[in-house]
Image 1 (cartoon, rainbow, N blue to C red):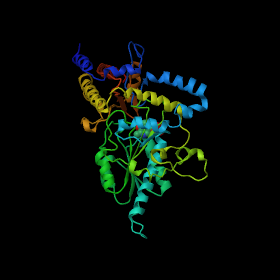
Image 2: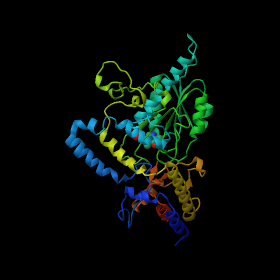
Image 3: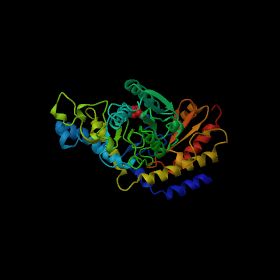
Image 4: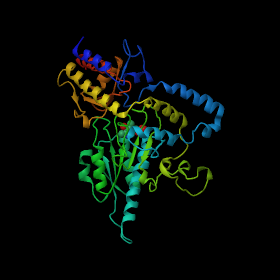
Length: 420
Ligand SMILES: *Cc1c(COP(=O)(O)O)cnc(C)c1O
C-alpha cells in the first residue's frame, strides 16, 4: 500500500467525527465505476441527512395531509423561521433571537444591504447636531471578488438608495473606507479560491469608519467558526444548502445584531414581519427583534427539511471539531496531490495558511472543464468553475481521509491521460 493510503487509514482511525457519516445517506457501493462515489461538492449542495426523508414524509402526510391548517399553530409552522434561526445561531457564534430563516440568500443580501445603508443614515441623523446634515454616506463598498449575485444586488441597492457602488478586493477594503461609506458587503470565504477573509479585522475597520458591514457566510457557516456576536458583526446572510445540508433551494437566513434590531428598517416589509400579522392593518408596524427580517409566508416544506437536517449537529458535534477536521482534510488533500500529480500540472489557488483557508481546495488547470467531467465519470464529484478552476469541497461530517486519498489518486490518473 502506498504511503498516502497508509496515512489515510491512520487518520480515519483517529477521526473523532468518523461516526457522523452514518447520519447521511451516501451511496454505498453505488457511484462511479466500482465503489462508492467520493462526494466533494458539499460546498455546492450538501448531502442528504438520514433524518430528512422520514421528517418530510410526516410533514407532508400527517401535518399537511391530516392536520392541514391546524399545523400552523399545532406543529409550529408559524414560528419555524425564528425557531430554526436559533438552531443555526450557535454554529455561527450568535446568541438566540438574532437570526430568521427564509427567502434566498440573494433576497437576504438585498434586505441586509439596503438595511445597512438605512442604519448608516439614521445613525448620522441621530448623532449630528440639530440642523446639520452631517456627512453624507453615499457609498456602498462591495467585495470585487464576490459571488456574482451579491454584486448584482449591491449594484441595484446602490441605485435605489442613491449610492455609488465601489467594488474593491477584500484586502483593499480598509483603504477604501471613509466618512462617505454607508455599507460594506463581503464574502467570508471566496467561492472560487476558497480563501478565508479576516472577518474580525475587516469588521473593526468598517466600524472605525462609522459604516455597517454585511457578511455573506455561504461558504463558511457549518464549516468553520464565524463568531458573529464576538466580532460585533452588524448583519449577515447565508444559505443552508451547502455545509448545512438543508437540501436544494432550502431557505437562507438573515442575522441582525440585537442592538440594531430596533433600527433595522427592512426594504421588504411584509405581513409576516408585522408586529400584529393577523391584525390585518393597512399601516405597517414592524415586529420587534429578528422577526423584522421576515417577509411573506415561509416555504414550510423546505424549511422543515432544513430543520431535520440540522439534527446532525445534535449530540455534541462542535463547529471547532468540524474546523479542525476540515483543515486536516484539506492539508491531506494537498499532500496527496503533491505526492501523485506531476509538479506544474495544476496550480493551487487556495492559501496554504490555515487562517486564510475555508473548507475547499481550488486547483487551476487549463483543461479543468474536461478534467472534472472525467473525474465525475470515475466517481469523484467536485465541480468546475469557469474558466479553469477545479473545486473540491470538504464536508467534515461525511468526508473521510480515504475519500481524500482516492480523489487525489483519481485526479492524478485523469491528468495523466492523453487528451486532457
Ligand atoms: C451559494 C452562494 C449564494 C447563493 O445565493 P442564492 O440566492 O441562494 O442562489 C450567494 N452568495 C454566495 C457567496 C454564495 O456562495
